[in-house]
Amino acid sequence: MPMSADFAGTKLAGFIAQHRKLFVLTGAGCSTGSGIPDYRDVDGGWKRRPPVTYQAFVGDAATRSRYWARSLVGWRRFGRARPNGTHEALAKLEADGRIEVLLTQNVDGLHQAAGSRNVIDLHGRLDRVRCLSCERSVARADFQSELERRNPSWNELDALDAPDGDADLEALDFSTFAVPDCAACGGILKPDVVFFGENVPRERVQSACAALQSADAMLVVGSSLMVYSGFRFARMAREMGLPLAILTHGVTRADDIATLKVDADCGSTLAGAIAVGA
Ligand SMILES: [Zn+2]
Image 1: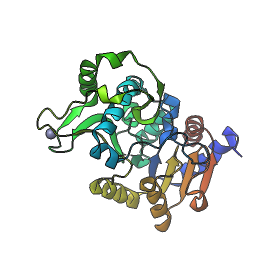
Image 2: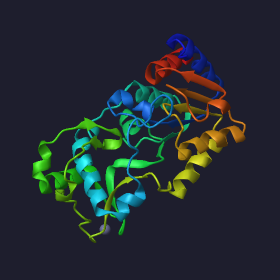
Image 3: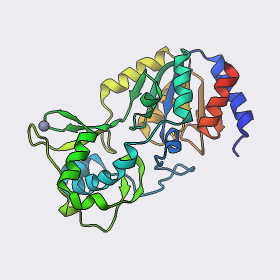
């Protein structure tokens, strides 16, 4: 049963007031208010077909054509998404010196766009494209222009937006879609994000662990923690004896270990909690 916004905000304000340095973990629920849909429903189940795996993307040219064709359409709106009240509230909390680090599972860069500086992009950033052979990185915006130039007939398409800059395009012949290789070495280009079936780079995990050790408490915002790469930080926090607050809609994988669970709208509740604490 969701709490009333006022009550939830008061409980959260108490938590934030009690702990000076927060380790914040954010997920898709932060960005739904910016028009980027979530993969999961309130019960933590898949709302749609699970995303492409690393193995399928790397191993199969047809899968890459399908991925980039959908991404060509999805990026138009994803690339223009703007931060919302949740991002702004967290940026303010950081400006007030209250955030040790903000670890995000989102790949949209909206925390940085809202002014957060101390951000670790756990799963990478969708605004970069990287060569799997020579590591050369190019801006997604430039890659988008190249995709459009090579596939003029696909520019007319539109589709329902899907998460991570994807779009729902089915029943189309993706084999005609031309995908550019790396201009430097001819290698396979991949969005600079961690795909399902791929490990998060070790240095990134180590930086986040170090930040967790310097924090007084952990705050999860807008994540069901269904993905292990995020969930493990909640478990680690509790093993270290840190209090854990979760603000999100619906069930999470860490509900049974949370110190405080607030089932409410992220943006308004967080903004209210910060206002109370100020
Ligand atoms: Zn290359």
